[in-house]
Length: 250
Ligand SMILES: Nc1nc2[nH]cc(C(=O)O)c2c(=O)[nH]1
Ligand code: SF4
Ligand SMILES: [Mg+2]
Image (cartoon, rainbow, N blue to C red):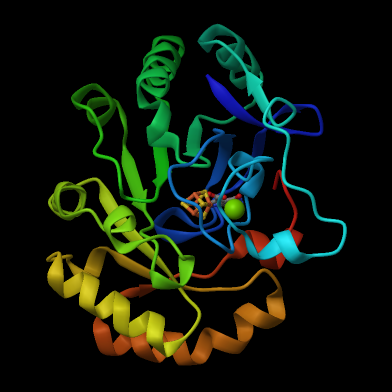
């Protein structure tokens, strides 16, 4: 399986779930490499922003910023190598993230099945951008989908980021919750439209302020909480940013 590489090693870390329904839950994060979208503000662009790609990213214009070498930022590990790393960590809650984990759902299904053989008590949740339909096997093994569809501000064309059939799968799936990142009132209008067009139950929706600093998150908190109250959605913070700041591997 292709995992993101951090400091020369596969990006697997033990932290707390910082966002959404399970906020605060101690969890192991497994970060897969590769993504089918190319969000201009992506904070994990070392999973796709390769040298030679035609996609542009906000960081591209930063002085000294270089796109990533694909071979240097992917760590290929097989299932037994990953399970032996995970077995050493005293936690049975796994968050599969990326990149876009569902690009490697066959391998992730094998991983989940192998771990359940070690301990039937493993809990698996996956972050996903909501553009790829899970296979039957993946759906059987996963406990929770954290679906985080991307908005117009991501710079991905609408037909790539908004797939009617995939929305239908997740909006009718008991295990799915939705998480939308909100920076502006325009984002909120778009989310209202998505909720209505795709029949999403507002009780399964989490609105999260955009921001990679405490100050930025706090500045939007009151406004966004009032909007959540009016819409009947949930509010979620980004707890790991408050605790650790904007760092990788936490
Ligand atoms: N603590 C922590 N919680 C998270 N929830 C979703 C994350 C992600 O990057 O997908 C994430 C992350 O990177 N760290
Ligand atoms: S979908 Fe997620 S990982 Fe992929 S480019 Fe967008 S923010 Fe980054
Ligand atoms: Mg993150």
